[in-house]
Every structure is written in structure tokens, then in C-alpha cells.
Amino acid sequence: MISNRWHLALLVVAGLATPAAAEPKAAFVARCAMCHQAGGEGLTGQFPRLVGRAAAIAQSPEGRAYMARVVLWGMAGPITVEGAPLMGVMPGMASMADAEIAEILSHAVTLGKPAKPAKPFKAAEIAAVRTAGRVSMADNNALRATLAGSGVIK
Image (tube, rainbow, N blue to C red; front, side):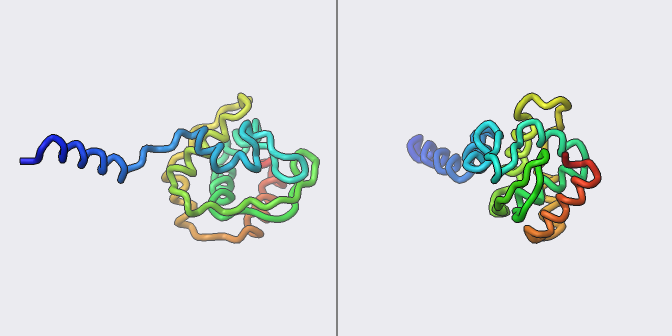
């Protein structure tokens, strides 16, 4: 028979081995706020604002896949956001779990009381993009240009 002390120790160790899901806002702040800022305002000339824009992009399947691709594989190069040129680098974060990326993107689409709310991201969406294969930062930049040309990204 296991003593109460050993039983408690096993429960504590089991709890350490299975980390609790990160709170989405805390995960966003920890992973994204350095560039996009805690409220998603971005930095002029370097990093686009996410506030209000992320939810609009996430309205279509193509926009959602693009968002997942950028978080997974990163993006570099010049882009134009709301008529202003930006030059920055978004590092890929493929080392993050699909569930954490889904939580972060789900938080991003809630920033700034979007005109049309977007549905939360699911880990399965991120997994599908990951399974489709790695793409280059330049490929993500080219996809962004295509999506901007078609009106998915404004």
C-alpha cells in the first residue's frame, strides 16, 4: 500500500509532467507583445497592428491558413499595411505546440472589439497547416501579396 506522503508526491509529479494550458492573453503577451505590443497595436514602420485586422483576416479559410503559416514559418520582407510600408521580420514559431498557437491566434482575433468577430482557432487547424509542410518566409510574403490583392487582407 502506498503511504499518503508518496501518493501526494506522485500527484504533484504527475501535475508537473502535464502543464496546464496557457491563458491565451498571457501566451500572446509572452510570445507576441515584444513586436506587436500587448494590445496588438504594432510598431509603426516595423510590425503591423493586429487590433481589428486579425479578426478581418480570419473571416476566410485562406486568411486563417495564412495566419497559421506566418506564426509557424515566419515572414520577412517589405509589406504595405493600410497604405504604410513596413519592413520587419516575423520569426517562425514552429517549436510551439499547435494548441498554444491556436490560443494565441484566438486571442489576436479578439483584440480591439472587431466589427465582425472571428471564430476561435483550433489546434487541428494549426496541425493541418503544419502537416502541409514548411514554407519559406518569402513564400509567406508572396502569399500575403496574393491575399491582399484578392481583398482577404486589407
